[in-house]
Structures are given as structure tokens and as C-alpha cells.
Image 1 (cartoon, one colour):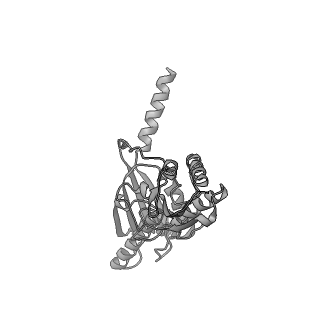
Image 2: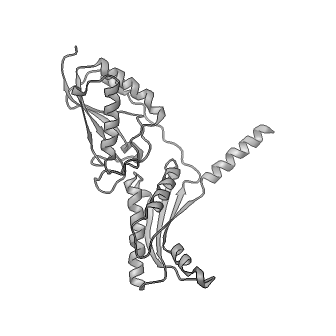
Image 3: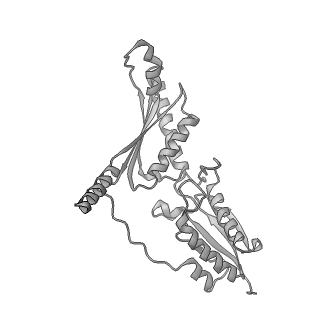
Length: 278
């Protein structure tokens, strides 16, 4: 009986997880810049959905009843566009954003005369609807690649480049996930032993508009690819890899791989020189 209850709880949680998730961002009068408090609430929402397998995101902008129809239509579209920009700046795949539409004004419905300002405030908004896949998609089988530490131990020449697979960062941050630290430690050990390799740590981001860098949510700076590369650089230096052998650089979104966006959130090693081992 206990086993059945556990199974039912698991199924109910799975079904609940696949329901559309909604979030509302409120704006000041005649503005489409996101207020600081609303920006913070939006980032919390992004943190909640970033682990989901998302099918589509819909973004709809609205205004209150003041202003002409044409003015309100433009303002509502600008509000919707500002939300899409936040998604892009925080490494969300733009291809899943199926609607970014300004809907114009919401007609005022009075309950009490004194509620007019409150009601108008609630009408100045953008509605975000996130639909995960239902049922969840099957996970693709990942092809087994040589480990980075094994590549480091093999034959290398200037110009060789390899990805530090399974070096995973939290979306929007330059902080490494706990499960990646043992992998990075093994890479550091291999680079300490292989002291004839000089290299550049290259950080990449996904999903930003054009080739821009993403925003680091911790520092609020648009340098996330640089910050991720520097994190690896600092870690390797702390583990004993000479700084004379290393450089780091942010590649922004100049070189997307063309597959799933998560693989563009990557760090690569570019070998710049191979000398004689001590």
C-alpha cells in the first residue's frame, strides 16, 4: 500500500510539473522599462523554470485605458519586447519564444471609485506563459567523448581545442554547479602534470541576441562568458597551474554550435603552445 501511495505522489508531481506556469510583470505609467522590484521577481521566476524542458514561451503586453489606441498598442509591444530581452540576456533559447505581442489597453472595470488607480496599476503589465512539454520528451542519448584529462595527457599541438564537458554553470551565473567540481579537479591535476602546455580558457554563452554577451545575474554586468572563463582560470591557478601558462577570454555568443542551447554554455581550452615538459 505504501508503495502505491509513493507512486501516486510521483505521478501527481509529474503531472503538476507539466502544467503551464504563469508570471506577471507590472510597469509604471507610460513606461516599458522594468522596475527594479519587478526585475528581481522576474529573475526568481526564471530560476524556477530554467530546469524545465520548455516547449514554448508566450509573452503578452498590456496597458491601462489611458492614451490613444495607437499609443497603447506601441507601449504594450515595447513592454513585451523588454521581457523578451530579459529572457535573452539570461541565456534562454529564443526559438522557444513563440509570441511577443502587444495587446494594447485593458478596458477599465470599476468595482469601487477609489479602486481606479489600483485597477489601472494591475492593467499595466506583461503576462508570461511558459508551457513545458507534456508528456516530457525522451532524453537524447549523449555520445561518450574522451575525457578532457585524457585529451590533456595525449598528443597536443598549438591550435588544438577541446571542450571541458560536464563543466556546468548555473544559468545566468559564473558559479560552477557542485557536481562539476570533481571533474574540474581532475582536469587541474592533469594540467599540473602536463606543464608543457600553454593555453587560453574560452568562455561561451548561449541564446543572446546577435553575438552579445549575457548578463551575470550576480554582478549585473554583461560579461558572463568572461566571468565563466575567469572562474576556470582562477580555479586552475589555485590548484597549482602556473598563470604564466594561461590566459582567459570571453567569446560571448560568437560561435554557437547549432545544437541544443545548453551545449553553448560551455568552456573550451585552446592550446596556444606546446613546449618541452620539465
